[in-house]
Figure 1 (cartoon, one colour):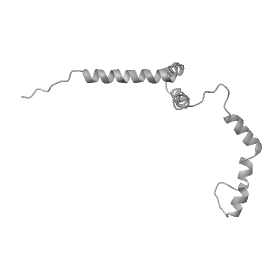
Figure 2 (cartoon, helix red, strand yellow; figure 1 turned 90 degrees about the horizontal axis):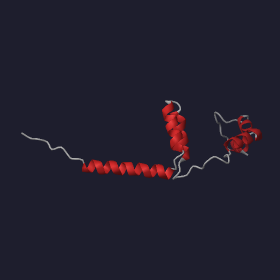
Figure 3 (cartoon, one colour; figure 1 turned 60 degrees about the vertical axis):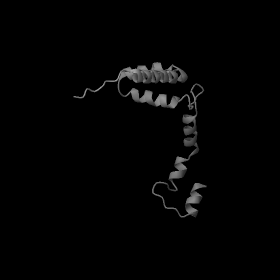
Figure 4 (cartoon, one colour; figure 1 turned 30 degrees about the horizontal axis):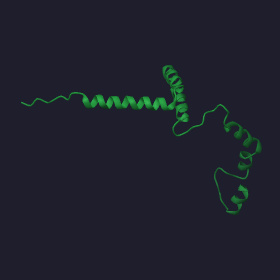
Length: 110
């Protein structure tokens, strides 16, 4: 169908040709891709309030630098997202309260 549309519309493309499409869309290649991207039963779903894909990305990048970061993210990966978000919110609130109550310096003018 795609080749018919290319021909009927007289499209001249640089990378897509009559030989390219049948090769890229061969049933074996499509089946291999579908099996590669099919989620495994133990793979967690990425959700708004449980962004596991972001965690996986950060973990992957952390392995490129220092082993300490990798271990830190492995430990944090076992903590439920709600607990992590709540703890972060409490730390930010505590820092804001401390900053607000901290005595301010008064400038001395001569």
